[in-house]
Length: 480
Image (cartoon, rainbow, N blue to C red; front, side):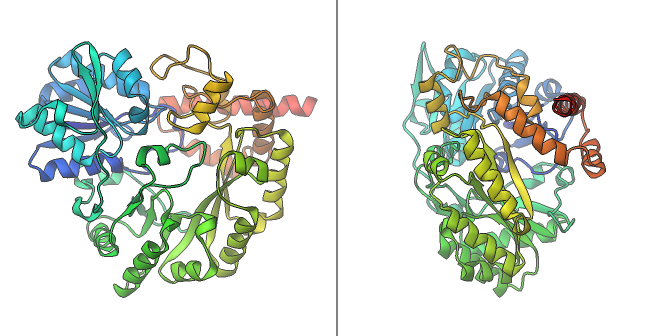
């Protein structure tokens, strides 16, 4: 018997091997609920084959907290339905970015979902438990939730952001089987795991919802608190490296430097990776990061067209990108650089500028990341633009079925719409993807990597469609 069941739904559209990252957000909620004295269980359906209905019947939770993303929204709705078929008195809660920006739609169209936890959920789930389990609060008084009140949908006031993240317990990793998460540090092939040292991103990129969900406020943990968690991970789990999963670690230079100082003060000797922004960097900061163990940085360029960068509100210049590439090359720091195609206003000429930029700087880029086609997520400027321009179907709803097979060839979830514009749509996407695949898909190494990823029937199905589509397109282009 438990009080609260926390569930991460299975993502049917992920083709990479399961087990890269535990559901850290859900584990943060579980940790604070445990600290408040509630009996909690966490189930990660991405890595566990569990009869969820049988588990609910056995454990009889009073609340089921469901997380999820835009691609897993229908799996989240189905989990709520399963809960209600077992016991209609179970309170189903749904949180995360997708839930936050679609609360009205979900409560109107998904009767099995009772409560939407908006934005930062740590204290909100505690108050929800107090209201539902202990009856110490009324739902009306729980900040940061949306729910049905009679025939109406009630949106309570937003909850203020947590200012001191050190007050939160470490994620409850003991509630999942950590051996399921076989993350390897890139280029080093040693076991690693993820941590977060801050929350929030004040940037305004058109394709990202981070600014909307966190607001402009950036909050951070102390260097001591972060180092304590890392020390615990090394002592308790088979970890040899750390991936810092902040939206952008380097937004606050003082925060980065304090982490480096603390790592060196403690004599830490481990490799770590983080995401940076090129407009927050200089050589001296990179030198200090390298000295403290940073061996690999990720950053988004997205496009080498100044026009497209301006339209997406990226806030960077190509000169800043080139500076960072020069510094990392000189310091021996690996780089993963993200480029994406299909942004607002992008043309084929803009695409060629990006491709030329990659070619000119390929010796300084360790790994090119990104993809073809900009996925539309709720709460983003891209969604607003697509609706205003009619690039989403007039009857489109985030709660109604949506499926586009064209996405599969692009390695995008077929239930998540892509931004398709007259000058940059699926014909251009397919051409871009086939050009990339002809260079990178059919080598023996690439084929072996794909084979190793076939860990589920859905992955086999999607990879088969992807591979045959790629082969068909390559043959058609050769005949042409």
